[in-house]
Image (cartoon, rainbow, N blue to C red; front, side, top):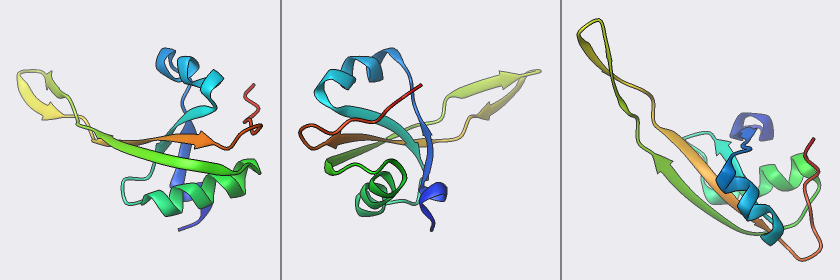
Length: 91
């Protein structure tokens, strides 16, 4: 997998803006990616040094459309902690 395939997006949410002063960033990642691949991808794409990676899977939600039940897709997210003095420039 390439770095662009592993990291889908840098998420800008309320929770992620709370993490930024602690040098933590929230990413939407590929479900098959592991912590080592995520670390290497972030270091390659953003030219920063990563200290830690924590991942979690958000389960899909139950949806109902025209009386038919369905489910949205599961997504994997990663909280990436950068080393001291490192920062990702977000626009």
